[in-house]
Image (cartoon, rainbow, N blue to C red):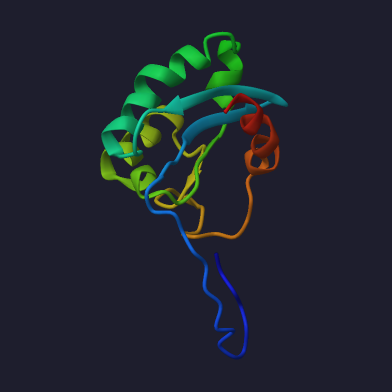
Length: 130
């Protein structure tokens, strides 16, 4: 939790460290339709992300017409696993210049406060599924 103040607000927040949890989800938005979601088991790292892109994403896109897949753009945020060399090489080969990310030609700034369209959609939708 963040508190922004000119002076130190002297706030404390108790946190129950005995029940840590998190959920990682890959989800896409294409022509107004949701692709996925795909729930990631464990922490997202480069090898898991590469598996999602090479093995899971093709299955999620199998009902999308080929001509749309050939011209679609791929956008990702600033997660460290998204900018690993093996990932960026894969994205360059697969999408050419049609991808947005921290390490691509079309930059997505690190720790960007800007929300992607999926941020707006996914909050309520994913809460229902979780």
